[in-house]
Every structure is written in C-alpha cells, then in structure tokens.
Length: 247
Image (cartoon, rainbow, N blue to C red; front, top):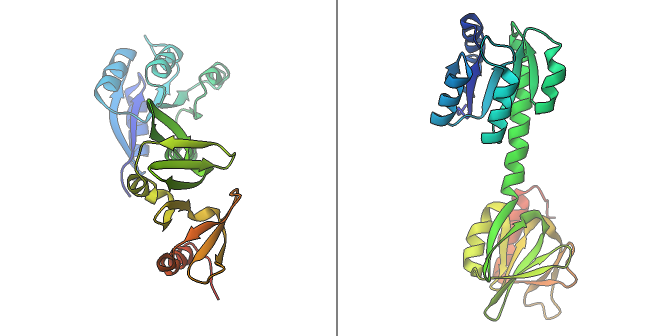
C-alpha cells in the first residue's frame, strides 16, 4: 500500500513516544515524519515537513497541548489532530478544537486502528470534495464551479458555454478541446463536435427523425442534444464499462 499519511507525534514522555511509534509501524499507510517532546520541537517539525496528522499529548511538562493545538489549527488548518491523554476529563475541553479522536494512554492498537479509520474517512471526503470543484477561465479572471452541477458544455460559434442544472450559463474563454481534456477524468464525453456531456446525466439515446444520427436526453436539459453517428458505438462502450447493459 502506498504510504500517504504523514504523522507527527508530540509527547514529553519518551516511553509514550516509543510505544505509539511501535503501534503506528503496524499500519502500512502511515509514515512518522517527526517526534517532539515539547512545543518548540513540534513547531520546528511542522516548518520542515509536510504533516497530515498530529498525535498530541494534552498535558506535558512545559507545554500546554491545547495551546499548541490552537497554534497548529491557526497556522496549518489542513492538519488533523488526535489528542493523547492520561486523564479522560481533559477530553471535555479538547472538543473545542474539533479533534478527530481522543486516545487514552497507553493506546491500544485496536483503538488506534479505529482512530486512523476516522482520519482516512475525513481525508477521503475532503479529496472527493476537492476534485468535484474546478477553476474555469472566464472574462476577467476565473470562476470556481462544481463539476457535478454541469448539465453539458457546448460550442456556439466562437463561444464555449457551460450549462448548469439550475439554468445558469457561463461563457468560458477555454476552448472545447481543452475542456475535453480537463473533464475527461470526470467522465465527460465528446458526443458531437460541439458538445461535451457528463455520462451520468444521460437518460436516453434516440435515433433522429432522418435516421442519420442520434439524440441524447440529459437530466435537467430542456432539449435533446445531438450524438454523432460515429460516436454512438463509442458511447455505448463507455456506458457498458459503467455497468449499463444493452440488449
């Protein structure tokens, strides 16, 4: 499994650092990038390494874990926190920092696995949210759009228009060819020389009145859109790969 979760452990007791490190070594997707016994060491590590998750002891000799947590959330808001404590009562105050979890020392490996599962879920949701939004060039700048809300993209003369489910239409300065490349990873299909359509919005495929090409019915689109005759077989192949059966 690819290592993709970079961890910093902060605890003023060496035995606790050693124990947690040994437990984390069990998980193939976790890499410990630093250990710290006080706030200064932790800050230095954060400045020199990319960190995804901090295991942070709440009560240390010269460091208030909550103060360090406040600094981390202020300077590195993308970093997730798991508090370590020998006293469950500290957990009540700790909720103000919206940690992923609280672990009572000594940390049991099964309880650690549950906490890491929460971290993976949060990161997965953040990644899914991130990839559904994209910046599109428009006159005077860039507009952030949600990919899932696109009904279809069309070229009208020299203009390229993006149509949305709520009826909104924006004019982008990007070419249709460029957008075809950009949106390919989001399952958009070039159904016609002038149209890009999201595969998951297709509700029907129909032969046109002259039986020379086809039309597509899309969810939230008022009118049918053209499907080139030479694209018909290719489209059915893509839809089959998504689990749609044709008889």
